[in-house]
Length: 540
Image (cartoon, rainbow, N blue to C red; front, side, top):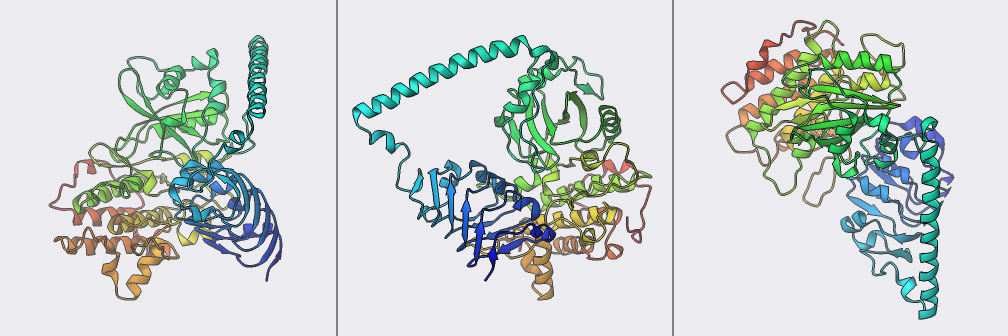
């Protein structure tokens, strides 16, 4: 039986996907840094211990959690609303603690009352206790006192707020509010735009120009972007385009054109170096790459402007509830388009443009469902310290990419490579053909998950002679079996454990294009030459 508190040495288990320390005698609080120590957790079970203190809001940074079990402890305080951001969470058990306050509505809607039972202080759906009952239980006089106190307090607060506003308006010239919160999550966390956009509302900031790579008919200013996003309201946040690099907002300008504005979470570059990088990325134009249209620098904020992709991210399209699944021809066309774009980045330049963070979320779809790769150059941008250069950029702090897409060699050699990108692309091929997610494989109708990644799952099925089980049921028996078999061969070739045995993207693209011959797979984009680094023997 394990005693003591949760140790910081867990940070040496960064690659762990399951942490089960249930039925021990662990004491103390849950460390807020837990998800920084083990960021790829899929299953977390700390039930039946002696844990105390509040539930840290930072648990929302464990973005891959499928199961969170904290029952049978002595945890207290409110349930953080941030836990509702865990959109992969399928199993939750907070029963038998000392939690209080209102259950966050989204959690209450997604889980039964059993997940919250044994916490007498909780209220709201799905438990029977209604919030606010304490006021109604007061007598008339007591309730009157509470109301009077509330009115007086509100009036006093408004008066103080007015004087504070007048004071800050007078001294605004030389004053700048600092960013609140010492750090930001690198994930695509839903954030309250008001606190950082507040500084941008100043008149001199709103006039900041948006630098566009193609001369516009009408000049665009920051004020136009703010108006088009309602001052970067959370209601304008879009999943398609949001990533660990930054949060994306949908903006519709007055002329009706739709843009995606991405606010970088962090950027260590000086303004001069940042502008130089923007110029480099802005020159990367290809029909299968989301074009960077421009950027805006305001104080310490870095905003990137892209063409908006109306159909969203591949990761979202593959799991849209209530909609018909993608047919085989569409999946194949998406694969060929994404391969074409990535092959151009890796083999169309003397210095390969390595992506380093490729996933199904980084493959966006336009109105015709043509694949477009986004976040090109951003990994280098947000991780490169001022003055650094080189053909590849190192991964920092063990941050290798999205869980499920990380090539095995990165564990010992954390430098982005061409073959590392090819591995991530192979995982996307498995997602397309199986309908499963890279980090969370659901193996039956009950929602039970395979304890491993998608690559682990398909390799297990292959080893047991059940490779046909990899294929999405919606694709089986519809006359595409031969093409699907060839498609799977490319996926397996891209995800070989050893980089030297792995397909290059040059070979992967041409293999997929040959599978799509005779189908609606456009070859018009082959005018973009793939002139460099064609050999499969390279380990880049």
